[in-house]
Image (cartoon, rainbow over all chains, first blue to last red; front, side, top):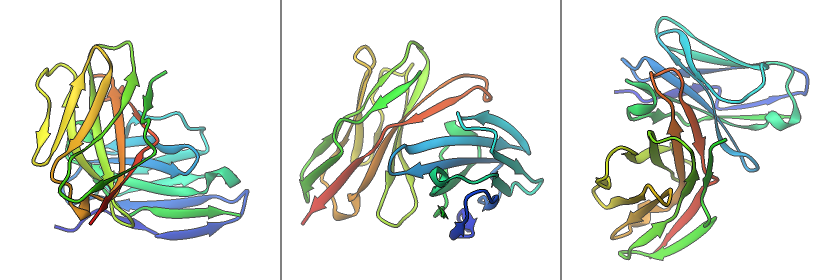
Length: 113
Length: 117
């Protein structure tokens, strides 16, 4: 079974731009969660989608948004990029959300200059 | 607000020995979940072990076990017979909420564990 894939793996953007990251879950998984990992703030939960609906949300500003498609693939969008948005963005998929085992992707490394 | 504290930024252990990683959390809730995640160098994060707060029995997964002290709000991870492949960053995580749509998930800062040959 193929694992969780994230595209692109690396991205460089300029402050003020917007960016869209993609996550393809394991086949059959309906829950996709997104996380931001930085050296300063550590690992922080962004949001979770289940069957195309945002089900859980962390404490991030509205510049961070996401969506999930009918095939469970998910995208995360960050608008008006700031230098502090530079991070490793991880997504994870599972059958049952947080209470089930989450399978993580390799992450997208976003650098904002 | 929830807080999760991992007081040991870095630890090291000799291969085949036992090591314990500490984690404390703060909550006023009675029902919640605790997790340990492992992030090996340049590899995907994986779930190591999970504990439901309403279960008194400590969770065990092969060489990994937890010592869950609910009153003390402590959730330590014990790795027995350490292997080189256990070298990784370990994150403790706390989740509270109910109904599938009201969860709050908080991670500790992580402990970098190095297993030496």
